Length: 310
Image 1 (cartoon, rainbow, N blue to C red):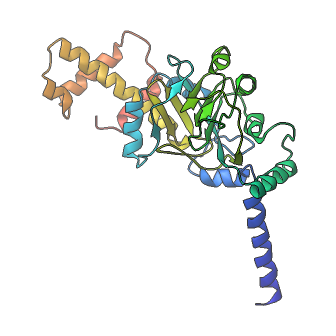
Image 2 (tube, rainbow, N blue to C red):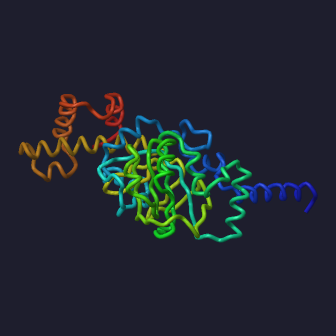
């Protein structure tokens, strides 16, 4: 190998080795993970899905979202069976991920050294590092491999800090302690696999804003999450707008169909199958005289219906 080729190889190896040591993913890596997103981004590289879409998402059912994602090839985005601090509350937000593993001293030492090099706080445990980077609208999502005893990522002190940063809550594939104290934080919520009074030990943070697994779901930094009492569903950022408008129209179709069935205007088979031109015309007229406020703008609705054979 000639000298220029050797130098290039050594440089690339050095870059890869340095990246492998990072605790927090670089903006370039996050952009590569979310390359299909074409909109605004945060400085850390995560997609900045608009707040207005996050708000509209709260009114959409998991089933409708799942249907859209499945049709796009995303069949591993849902996880159910949670303990929820405030089960009647709905939470949406932009995901910040964290990965935890059983403690291995040599790796834990390297992570602490790298965290120091990245400017992360050296007081307290590394489980505070993901909290330090949260912004308004973020949801802290962690895989702590389902550990209950000695696996509690937060108590009420860190819960208060999380809410102060994000005005949201957490989704942990693991546990937290002091659920009573967490329940007293106004506006905060948590989806957990369990609670335990013990404090965290014999586990370590290994990455921030890298891909993680949450039960049966694969989660990327910058995903948008909908969490409610029926489960949590993670949506790729580039699909959020399509998921929202498609789900909203589906719910309007359902509302129209239920009303017409109660009125006995159509038979069940007519509503459950491909609509005739007469039913389509009736639906459009029903939309034009909708008694409440439509969830989307009239322009959004018109643009959507132009391209769909509903």
